[in-house]
Image (tube, rainbow, N blue to C red):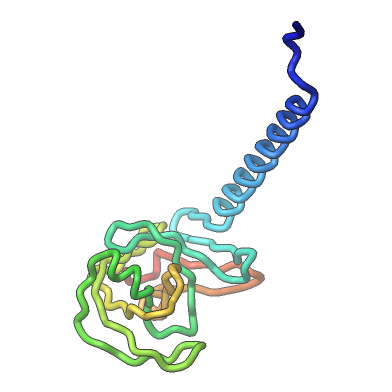
Length: 164
């Protein structure tokens, strides 16, 4: 009786190992891309535009890690209504907001926002919007407190001159 594995099992094992290596390689590459998009050097943060054409700023809302999409065209910071419910944020009123999809009614909530690099806003007023995806929008209510400029796909934020 032969103890050698059948040929089909050998071929399947090789393909599974190759698939695993490709998967791990892609995961490593994506991790490297995320790391190089956000750099803190002293009092300067540089955020490189991501592959989706947007700037992303890692942070947290009431301690829950999120990836903010920087929206210089937004007056205020917005989150999805689903995220507001998940965080247990109580409504303090309602507001109508103009979005790319038209005018929608959202709920005003308050939360603590902390951004990587040391920028924070305590009890910031956020708009919880139905239909917004899970990525919060960081608006001018926070960005307007900072000194920043955009050039060649890099958003440069100078922290030494900002009012946090």
